[in-house]
Image 1: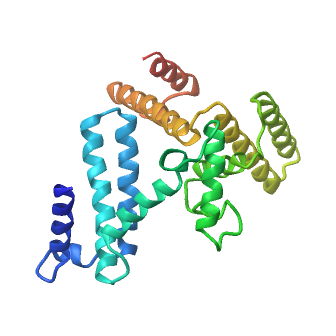
Image 2: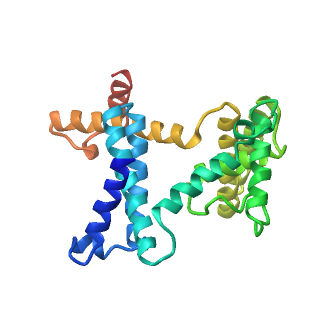
Image 3: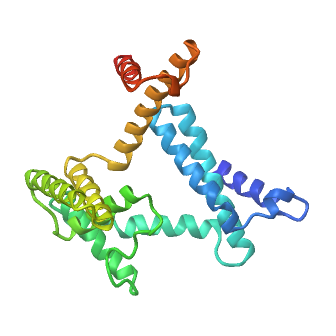
Length: 254
């Protein structure tokens, strides 16, 4: 906690009249891109399974939280201590099976209790989906919505019907394509993606993470082809589809 207080004092000094001009001009709005960037860099450190890098990126992420809190302190809105106190209180309040006498039969009941407690906290909430941000990445938001629905019982009990639903949505997408109805094709494609996210959830996979890793795999293979073409002093336009396919298979084998 000593180092945490030191970080607070350092950022407060940077924001002071005699501090850093760049830090002083930052607002909640101007810091939004940095908060998002640091979050994704932290995710990348997790993907790399690099403890040293993760430690660094968590620090960068913490910096954003402290900055936003100090800006709020300056406006007399709340303090960093309020932020820490609120999350500590929330964790105790939402875990009555640990910090109180509530008995639970398993994780499913824990989630049900969690949602019920949230309802009492947020009186203005109309739907349990109201707390899900609209600007989350699309796959991630779909998964969050599905998980919320599942926690109150709106869910398949097995994976098999979800697989059948995937096949059904693919068939509807194919039929829309055959009719050459652009709006319907887009709608049905969205349904396919949504159902695949549901399948990933039932298989206990992270759809956003799976897509990120698949994209990284594609990027690695694409870079391999670029390197091969540079070696042979060629460009993509110089290659036939068959040649590019050969390079792609080499990249996959590597």
